[in-house]
Image 1 (cartoon, rainbow, N blue to C red):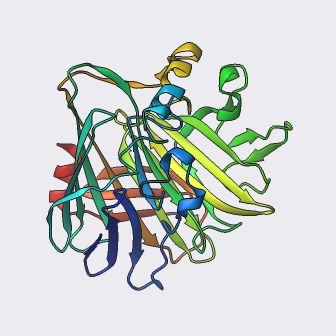
Image 2: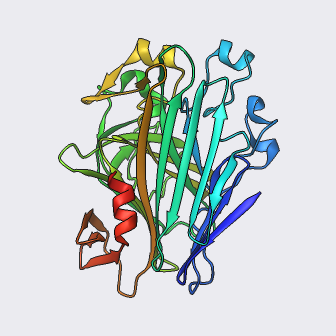
Length: 344
């Protein structure tokens, strides 16, 4: 079941099967949707095939990546149950949706409130997670927005406030083989710019969001369509930024612009054995029995009129999302109600 939220400028679609945000577009820009990514059932991991396929911006909750062998045998899917099961609608209106889901194997319950601004192309998401089991547990939560065609092509540029990072393929040697955003290396040692990669290298790179910033942020810009899409969150909620890229021969097919609490894309035992912390940040989170945690983020989409020269910084000031570009500052007004929802 899909639910659509709308205002005068934009439209947002959520699929209750898997809980993913599958479409966010400007009504006056040919309905171009950055979140057009979707897997077929056949593309899904074997332990996920009975549930919802990955699509758009889905939530990894409980874990990020593979479960352990024992967890797989117990029926736990990759990236946790929430992206795989049916969510329930609690309330909905023209620009607000309440939804929830319970993952019994993970022992977690989530309540999510999505609110689209009354006028502008920006929405806020508040997610409240509760441990419903009588034991505390390690867990991770990662927001997994993924770009695909036609928004994504060889000219798409990704900016973020990442700092030090590493290639997940070499996670055991992360401290020895680290990079400074945006320069990275492929498995042959070739250096390239991850803002606009032109090297065919299927990979996941993980970075620390700037320690000096109150916020974490990430954007993707379509040069062909002059469209800027992005996210802003409190850095204390999500200290890690993850960039996934998947190529189909010589053409980039998917780009994940992810952010979360996870540092290593492995089962928890491997994370603990390898590195409980990296570059001054934990690589997992903990939630006690009966504990409730709450995390929020903004998402926005904006049509640029002038030439794009990269994003330098994003913050919130004067009831607006302030996007500092190399050559100008964009101000996206946000209703006080959404600002309040973000900070509470």
